Image (cartoon, rainbow, N blue to C red; front, side):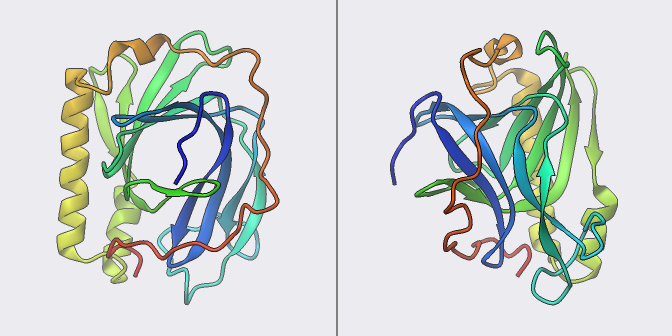
Length: 216
């Protein structure tokens, strides 16, 4: 698969059991052997899974439970997404409205990124960590939904333990400021000439089934 140049537009998708669960058009910041960095701009129009009545979906089985893909607009601030290739997590940086100061860090536990002709696919593992901008405080997020997925048999005990261990490992790297999470990212700003990307016509092309035991 190709590598991407800074400023190029591509698609970041979550895929569950061969189904596109979300699709976000993003901009490439860095595509290197040690780091994939992406930017999600405010105002971006994207696709996300919802219940047929438009409500949020939590720990559901994408094969047996009803859901639909719906249109959405990213109304939060700009997000920098840092993904070490092969790692089971991504680090998201959220800024204030004017991108003047880092608001918080967010460790999203997920299957490693897989390259596609239009960008990258991954599988979210539900459990996350929220870390303060100065990295002095942190907390687990979505533990109830993570437990519900286990209760439904969507995630087995061994996989759940591995996901939590990955979260602890990623947190230790972030708190230590270990590469690739260097302090330089705290003052990063997007190129002012970048435009907001749109989903291409082929955003829902054929996808491979995720390899993780989660969501099988």
